[in-house]
Amino acid sequence: MRVLIVDDHTLVRAGLARLLQGFGGVDVCAEASRAEEALELALIHRPDVVLMDLSLPGRSGIDAMEAIRAEQPAARVLIMSMHDDAQHVRSALERGAAGFVVKDAAPLELELALRTAMAGDTFLSPRLSSRMMAPLLGRTKTTGVDALSNRQRQILDMIGGGLSSKEIAADLGISVKTVETHRARMMEALGCRRANELVLLAARRNRGD
Image 1: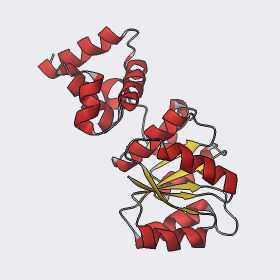
Image 2: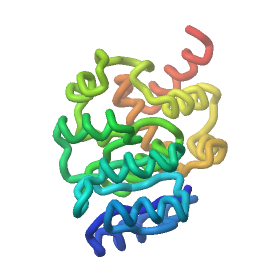
Image 3: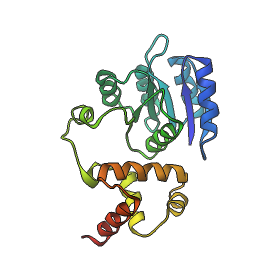
């Protein structure tokens, strides 16, 4: 996965670059500090994912995102910001963002956000509550398996097939930690208190019970 980092703070870019290089299969192909520079580097390096700060000098991160996607429709743009209010999140999603991650997210959350965006799904930091999410996405709140992402349902089916986290990670080309994070979020969404409850639910789903 080739990632372009866009942030106007040099130390933030350096820290993000170092962090991302530690994620398996992630290559930081370029760094930009302004919207215009981001567009130029995106055209040169053709990143898979652009990690875009919302607040940039001159044009905003959302404006930069639209300019990049106009030239490279396949590029996935993940907005990164300290602003997590409904207005900013709604604007980012409606204008084509692949997700919205808060700047103080844990490294594992950032890795999951990047891989979710790369997989074609939408990622939102857990801080954005489900109560906020429903009106933002223009639909009623979903529950149970329907509330899981496509990748989580895929992993659930693999769990139901008897695969371990290590085997699932190898098959999907992701880290074991990422699989475990998906497991934890699925357990929360499905109301499973213990790991074996998730396994039983997955097995029943595979049998069509």
